[in-house]
Length: 428
Image (cartoon, rainbow, N blue to C red; front, side, top):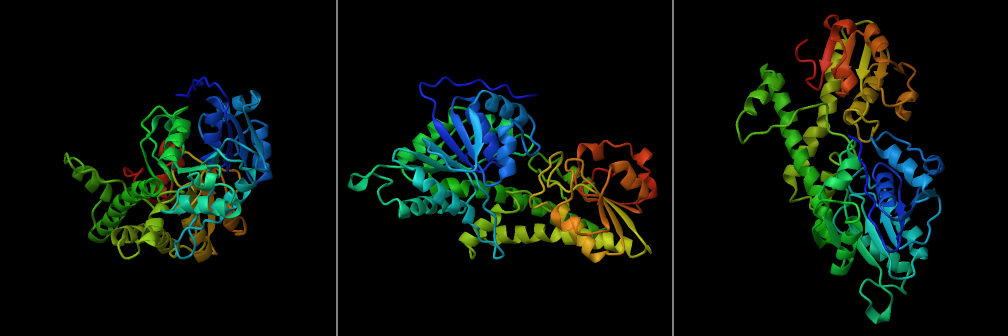
C-alpha cells in the first residue's frame, strides 16, 4: 500500500543537506522534505542531480518517485553538486571494502572535507553510512583537523558541532515504509549529539529510537547483518551437504522448520547487496582473531557462486554450442540493485569460462548490462520468453515474481536442463 506521509508541523524549517543520493540518501532526503525540512541533496553524479531536480528517481524503489516529485514540486527538495550551508548534514555515502576486506573510507573523508568549510558552529552532522566502529569519531576528527575553531564539547569556548551515527535499517523494495516503521539506533559522540539526532529522526520515524554511544551504534548495524549472514551460511552449507548425500535440501528445511524453535533460512546462489555481503567483513577487520565464526560464514557464502558456476559448466561441457538463459542479476527479487550480487558474479564467471556459449541474461529491472558483461560479445540482455525458448540450460538466479509466476509449460522448462538456485521450481 502506498505510504501517505503526514507532515509534522515545525516552528522553523531546518535546512538539511543529505550527502549522497543513492538507495538510502535519496529516500532519507525525500522523507525529511515531506516532513517539514528544507533539503538539499548533494551528489557527485551530474545525472543524478539533474534527475532529482526534475522530480525523477534514478533507480527502482516503490513509492519513492511520488514522494520525490511532490517534494521537488513544493520546493522542499532540490539536488546540487555543491555542498551548501545547513543546520544538519546527513552523510549517506558508500563504504565499500577493499581487497583486504577493510573499509574504504574515502567517500566518508570526501564528505567530511566538503562539509567542513560550511560549518559555523551549532550544526548536527550524522553519519548514516554503515561503518566499522570508530568511523564516526574519524569523521569528526577529520572535520576538526581543518576546523580547529570548532569543537565537540565547547572546550576553550569554541563553538560546538554535534556528531552522531544513525545507521539505516531498511530493506530495498520497502524503504519508504521501513524508514517510518522500523526502530532506529542513534549513537552520539556526546550525549547531547545523540539526543539531538534522535529529535531529528523523530520528525518522521514512528518507532523507537534508543540512544547510545557512536561505536555501539556502528557495531549494532554490523551485528544485525552478520547474524543474518551466519544463518544464511548454515543454510548454504546444508545445501552443499544435501547435494553430497542425495537429499532435497528444500524438503529437508521445510520439515526441520516444523520444530517450534527451528527457523532455518533458505539457501541460494550466494549473498549479495550493500549490507550482508559487506558488513561482516568490517567486524572481522576490527577484531580478526576474535571473529572466527563470522569470518567462516563469509567464506562459506562467498564460495557458493563458484559452486553454481561449476554445476552449469558441467552441463555445458556436454554440449557443442550451449545456450544458457540466466534469469536475474539483482541481489534480491523485484529490484534493480545489482550491488555485490552473486547472480551478477555468476554470469560474469560463466562468460569467462564458457567463451563458446551464448548467454542470454533476463533482468526485467534494468535496460543495459553492467560494464563487465557489456564487453562480452556472447552475452546478451533478452526477454524471458525468447531467452528460455532458445536455451539448452535455464539458470534461475533471482526469484523475481515474473520468473516464479511464469507459465512453466508455456516456457517449455520440462525440456530444458534447469539449474534452480532458489528452489522456486521444485515441482518441475
